[in-house]
Image 1: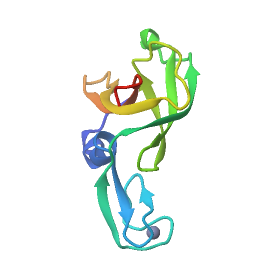
Image 2: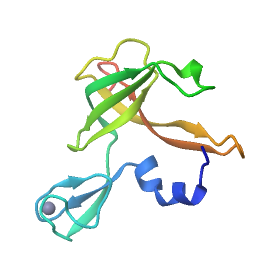
Image 3: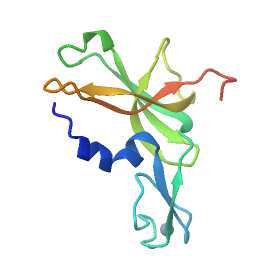
Image 4: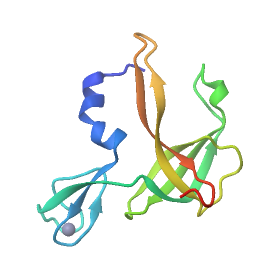
Length: 135
Ligand SMILES: [Zn+2]
């Protein structure tokens, strides 16, 4: 799959630093950041960098991977609720034992894919499980 650097640059706030918008009128947090609140329609929003810390709500496991990525199987995907209330789906990394729902997670930057035509590497946010007492 071809990697387009301009597209990565445009999405850098979402992919690398989890920037959301917070409505000044109703307090709703929108992720990715928006110029209009999705809850009340207000244009009075400010941007906020999310902590990247949250809870694993649920997860699923995929044993199907693309050719050349067999070492990465199985791949875990988590439904994550960040401490700011935002929910998102993201890959889980460094999964050594079966994840537990309710387990703490934190964002980390990892390699997503490599463009086979030119060697460009795309990085993005994944989440790792945090052992009790580390978060
Ligand atoms: Zn609002």
